[in-house]
Image 1 (cartoon, helix red, strand yellow):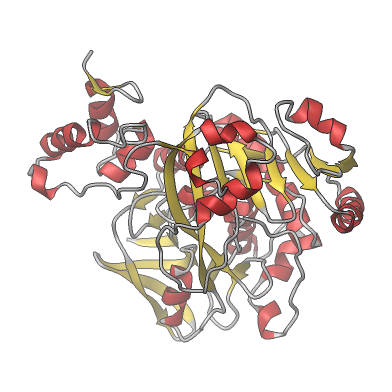
Image 2 (image 1 turned 120 degrees about the vertical axis):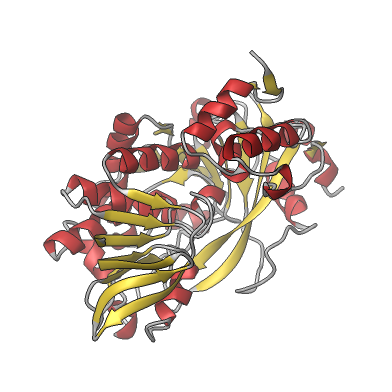
Length: 377
Length: 84
C-alpha cells in the first residue's frame, strides 16, 4: 500500500498535521513514531500557549494557533484554558522593552497590556509583589494538557482511518531521483508520495540521509512539578528577567522551569543546581513554596534553530519532503497552525498563513534570519 | 472495583480498558491513566499494572519494559533547595 502522506513523529506537530490532512480529505496517511506517543518534546513541555512574542512570524503563527486551540479542544474534548500569561517586569529596561513589544502585539491583533503591579491582586492574589514594577498581561494566552491533547488527536486520526505505528523507528528517507518515494523503518519500507518529518532533533538525523544537514541543535532544559493543589495558579507567570515560568496543570500540580546554561548536545540528565536556581527566583514571590513538595523532575530538549523559529514546510530540491522542527521551545504551542500550514502545503501547494512561508529552510540558506527576543525557560 | 493505584484512584477495570483501547506499554498507560505519577512514584501500582499488561498482551512479566524512573524517590519539601 502506498500512502499519500507518511509523517515521522507522533508529537503535537505530527498529529496536528495528520488531523488537518484528514480535514482536507487526505485519508491514506500513516504516522510513524519511534517510541511511544508524546515521547519527545511535547510530552515534556511546560504546557504554555502564547502569542506574546517579538517577531511578526511567531506572533501571527501563535495567534492563529490560539484560534485553533479553542476549536480543537472543544471538538476533541481535551484540557485547554485561556487563562493568560503574566510577565513580571522587575526593572525599568524591561518595562520599556515590553511596552514596545505590547505595541507590536496590539498591531498584530494580540491584545496584551502593560499594567501596574496592582493587577496581580486579581490575577494571582496570593503572590507577593516584591520588586515587580509592572506586568505585561497577555490575556489570550493559556495552556493545554499535552497528553490529553495527543491521545484525543490519536483517537480521532485512527477513527477517521489514519494509521499510527508506535515503537517503529524511521531510519532512512528513500528517493527516486529528486522525489520522495518512501521511508525505511525498522519494520520495513513505507512507501509514500509525501513525507513529513516532525521528529525534533531526529529530524536532523533523518534528513541527513538525503544529504541535507539542517542547522538544529539539541539543548537540554529542566522542569519540575509539585504535589497537587486545588486550582490556584490559573495563569502562566513568567519572571521575565530570568525566563522562569510557572503554572498549574489540569491535575493541580504546579509546574515550573527556568533556563540554566547547557551546551548543545549536553548530558540528558538532572542537575543539583537547577532547583536551587528556581527556588532562588520563586521563593521571594511565593514564600509558601518552601512547604510545597517536589514530586517529579525531568528533562527535555529545546531543539534550537539559528534564529529561534522553526524550520517549516517543503525542503527545496526534494519533491515531497516536508519538515517541522527547531521550534526552539515553542513547538507544542505552535503545532496547530504549523500542522495546518504543512497540510495546506501538501494539498494546495501553499499555506494559508503568509508568515509561514518565511519559515522555510530557504530563509536559512539565503541568510534571512528572523529575530526573536522573548524565548524563555 | 479493585484499586491498583491508590495515589490516582485507578482501578483494575480502568487498566484493562485502556490496554484494550491500545495503550499497550507502561509509558503510555502511565500517561493515559496517571499510574506511577502520584506520591508513591509507582512503587505500588507499577508492578501490579505490569502483571496485568503481561496477561492482557500474552507476554511474560519480564518482557514488560518499565517506565523511566524520575527523581525524587519520594516527595521532598522545596524549602530544602532554598540557599540560605
